[in-house]
Amino acid sequence: MAGLDGIFFIGRGADGGRRVEPRRPDEKRVAGESTKTAMRVVQLLAVNPFLTAKGSAKKLGVAFTTAQRAIERMERLGIVRQTGAAKRNRVYCAKELLDILEEPAHLAPAGNS
Figure 1 (cartoon, rainbow, N blue to C red):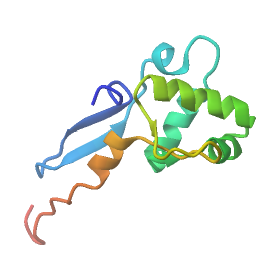
Figure 2: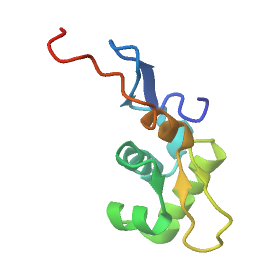
Figure 3: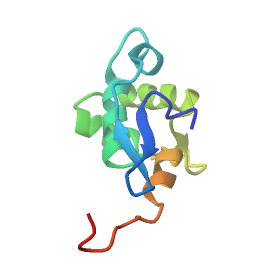
């Protein structure tokens, strides 16, 4: 979980299942000295653990290259990684977050409080 450490709180819920909550991460580590774009891209991961530079740029209203640099920084930090070998239209995934989201739900039977 090193890549997500400080980005999302990952703990156990009352039902024993893992839960994920976004938290305000160490901005210097994620965003670097010059931009907050990487922090905004991290917020996109809370909605969907998959992203592209083109989609991120559109959602955030920034240039493609700005979004790509932010994603590359997160890739170096181990937060996301490229899912295939494509040279264009690269898809990145926060795999650790995806693994948590894919865990089966631990639901309590109705009527139990």
